[in-house]
Amino acid sequence: MVKSGADNWTPDSWKSKPVSQQIKYGDPTALAQVTEKLCQLPPLVSSSEVDTLKNRIAEAQRGERFILQGGDCAESFKDCNAEAISQKVRSLLSLSLLVSQKLRMPVSRIGRIAGQYAKPRSALTETQGDTTLTSYRGDLVNHVHFSESARTPDPARMLEGYSYASLTLNYIRSLLEGELEELFNLEPEVASLKDLAKTKELHQSLRNFRDALQLFHQFNGRQAAHKNLTEFYTSHEALHLHYEQALTRLGSNGRWYNLSTHFPWVGMRTVQSESAHLEYLRGIANPIAIKVGPTVEAKELVKLCRWLNPENEEGRLTLIQRFGHDKISHKLPELIRAVKDADLKVLWSCDPMHGNTQVSSNNYKTRDFQHIQSELQQAFSIHADLGSHLGAAHLEMTGEAVMECIGSSYAVHHQELGEAYTSLVDPRLNLSQAFELIDSLSLKKAQ
Ligand code: PEP
Ligand code: MN
Image 1 (cartoon, helix red, strand yellow):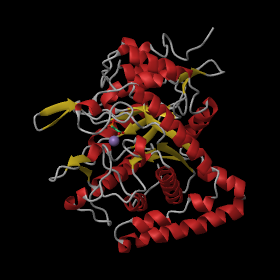
Image 2 (tube, protein in one colour):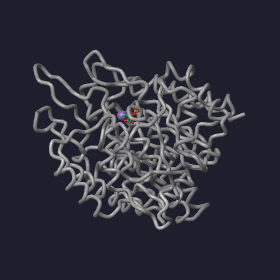
Image 3 (cartoon, protein in one colour):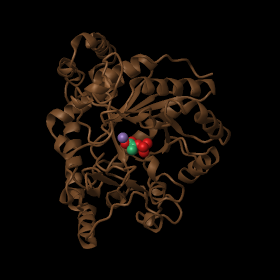
Image 4 (cartoon, protein in one colour):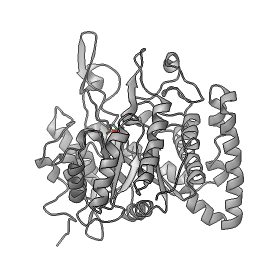
């Protein structure tokens, strides 16, 4: 008898629940053909890697490790090239080393990468002039170009997405076999940042890194240093359930795994109790995460945690809090207390990005560095004050020299937002801003 790991759950039981952010395809036969094909293709990650990540998350829950999750808001198919992938991997690796130095603990890295191709949208349609079309829903669904044909959802894009995810992952795996000095080399990225005077500190941090790397090598041996510093996992929002279901496979232990990624999460727009997305998450054996926004009530959160993790298994459930710098202090304490009182084993992660989005006067989606910094700082402090701890951070960031978030000592102004804005959806921190964010944290120990 096959165990599903959850009562009355099958990989397609989500279909009996309300699906928000549903993608509407014109041709059900084409959709069925694509999902059948996807079911036959090999998985992208292995269940043993997924289990290892669950152990790492369990360590982070116990305060023995930190998890850094980061990358693009939306990956694009055209960025599936050596330079872009290498830049993403090297940036996340180097930032994680800074986090490790700052927090004095081992750090695991999870990219929003190799599958972050489907997007929820607050507005499901977009109007320009007299024309209203379906919003861009990520490369897995449609094309960003504003035309009827580009915006029409095409199921064949799921096969393309699978292929690009696979190529990306393959290249990541080969990169990670490389020399540490290369993997932690960010000189080209630093050189491309607009004003070098402002990146002096970044240069200094990188020099310190190289010293730290050499020491690490010397003390631990090359192999151990390499293993510790390069373990890398993938994640994406489990939004497109046809795609997720097709990559859900039965492990040799009789449990179902989503093997399109190590760490799927459900976003704020699909996290309602009884939703199709939560139904899907409930039955897979992966470590899973849900976004927790300002409208979530403590009682409801406890109920959700129990439902998604009935055995209260360590490493299973991560709560990615995303309130906004001005709301976190009102909302978070009550949720932390409720989770503590119910003795729930969860990893708390702070996403200081999504509660702080604003639209600039020149019509760019942006975020103010000070707001991001304030939310992350408050998250660490509130957890510590309540005897809980923040064990992870979730950032939208890039190694590209973009100007998408305003503020920081890199000093991006509203007027500059058009100059280097390449994100397809939400604004990301550039490297200088991401380093400054981590560097600026002031931390105290949990009581
Ligand atoms: C995201 O992570 O890109 C996202 C849409 O987040 P949220 O669901 O928290 O709004
Ligand atoms: Mn986003």
